[in-house]
Length: 78
Image (cartoon, rainbow, N blue to C red):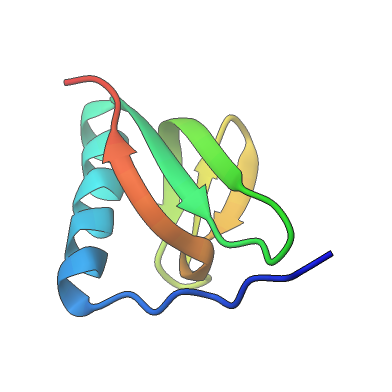
């Protein structure tokens, strides 16, 4: 089984990810976050319920994810 290395995100990509994250949290819209995993494609889909800037985590459906694991994001509804 091959593992993939973590992609490097540039500041513009991070800005877009943070925009989707904060829009989902503030406006209660559904978003999809692609998460880094070396062995499989992972995603968190739903409304962001909580953002913790101190632990750099966010919560969807009661499950906590690390912001550093996000490699892509898109809003699924407006």
